[in-house]
Length: 338
Ligand code: HEM
Image 1 (cartoon, rainbow, N blue to C red):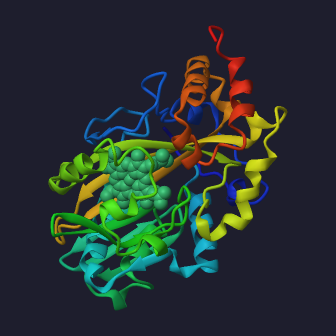
Image 2: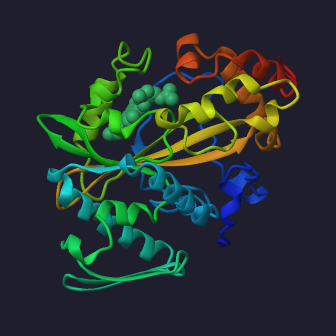
């Protein structure tokens, strides 16, 4: 797909963000069935579907410039959204290398990387950045390397240290989370940061998922989709800003549900880093309003059934309890068999 970046205003307070017909067609609709239950839905991230969000390991789309401006805005208000514990310094350089290599290879019209030993030259034409630096020397960059590269990369990132047969959330850049906080989870183990999730621990899902993740090899990344609902196309739904968005859940009415309620899908990538052996966890978030989603009748029908039949604890965890009935009533019109 040809990339024409949307301007900054599209992701700001007026929420005038819209997907084009092309973007709606490539939206990663997450439901393979009419029912949804947590599962270990991991798959190799190597299959490439041209034009889809899976075409490249790291997907860049028309919201790139707007989302990078949004990240800068959030960081200005709250610099602690980026965190790198001292023992994660090598993993941060690892991340910078992997992201620069992938972007330059997959989007050469927008990103270029030249290297001679440790002397690197990075050009980000989309954001007007031209940077020479010494790989491994933090003083040669304007800021810490994880922050530097993730200020130029759509989606959130957690960097997991692997030790004692477990993963620990010891670094990351998280400015667009679905209601969780890096500052709160920092230093936690895989089971600890997942402890608020209902039903999944009892089903043994996290045990099996962790075993899988610990064995991911360099060059064999893995992906999965996760989803929730968000009111307005708001990326930063973090606990830190709950006072700004939490009450929006009470504003859904039969008249505005299609415009306000958005399906929020996370394309999660798990990739082993070659130098540090840390695990890079990427969370690339896509938003689509229900008005946009129902332009695809098969998606509309399936979403109706999924939301209608979703187990109560999951619906509650995902924050939809206040408007779930309004939503199901609205979606029913798109499901002729219901
Ligand atoms: C190392 C990689 C991973 C990281 C960093 C991560 C992180 C998180 C975080 C921070 C949450 C939110 C918890 C909260 O409410 O505070 C979450 C939720 C969840 N995670 Fe993970 N996760 C990872 C891998 C996985 C894997 C492999 C699975 C596979 C089954 C999984 C399944 C889930 C589920 C089912 C939820 C609840 C999501 C929802 O209902 O919206 N996670 N994860």
